[in-house]
Length: 354
Image (cartoon, rainbow, N blue to C red; front, side):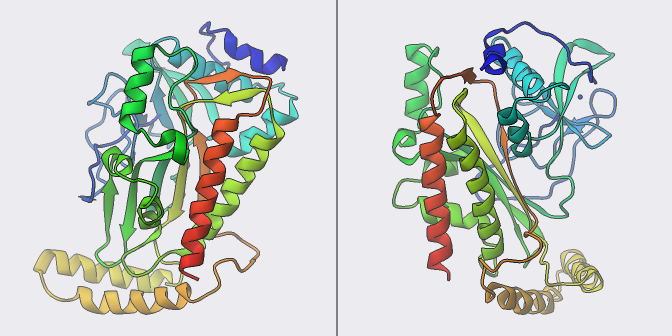
């Protein structure tokens, strides 16, 4: 309990590991995205090219950058949110941490490397975090806000009403899709969906809306759905075993590999070359690629998605955004409700496509 009480203190104490964070271009419903990065900012850092939600660098007052070393730099928000989030990361990743609850929590968060600031702008502080998408070739990414309330207990009445207006179904559904991008194997592009897409989803459409994240244009990636279910179950187990922290307006970041696993490196190289030729010459070379991928993908889709194997499908599910985390003495019922309903929807998607 002593560790969680540290969140009540909002003093800015730089981490010994001080030195880093992340951000990206604006997304909109159904928009095609090329994924190219913009010009460098602050000592070679660039806006994160694959951000799907949250504060955008160059658009909002604070944002996320990618550091040349591959980490992401999340700009510290104004007090008390920014200091509270930094305090949370510092508490969980404290070098001499011996709290079993926090040590297990580390498995569900991006790694934290302290703080970073540019010599040219030392007053602008960033959290230096692991880029969990870095190991993926074609990362499909989804940001899902969890919980029945997206405002904390100290929010003003105006803030509460504002958040409720944004998504009145938050209490009933328990989660909200903030943004996603999905790799389409047929044309080697990403379809991107922003917060407006997620806010338009209601109880009757939430399943199909969520399923779109796992569909690559040829078939549903049941392997990714199944692996995501296992990851979310692990996070649910942590929440059901702890009663010292409560999370508001926090999210889960889903990432899976969009590149078909059934294709070899050589054949993928050949297929991507055909797509490049199609894009440059406007010829029909893309047709055989679609046929090859479709055949391989349909074969993969025919496999039992829940089949146990020695290694999971390339999937990450990490907790992010901790500007509204508070000490508690009870279970986080709102977050648990959201996790359980999210699991129910994911399992329904899997069953419907069995």
